Length: 59
Image (cartoon, rainbow, N blue to C red; front, side):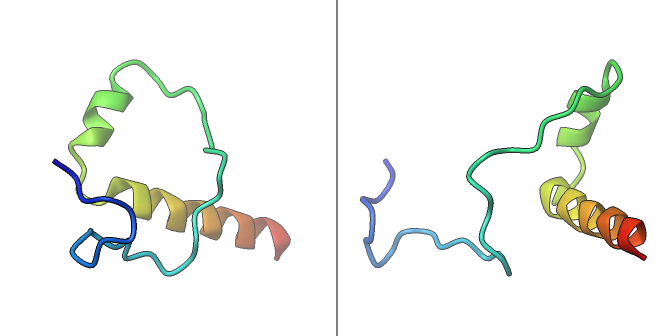
């Protein structure tokens, strides 16, 4: 059973920056979704990769 909002023992997010309210969505190739879920910390790694792509685009 999860703790209520603002409970002192509730898990806290360990992110450097706040997340956007709307997700980034794209269609991958068949089987990528299931394989991606097995990669440790894949969401944070994907966020860093997107930042790198944006910085390369602006350079």
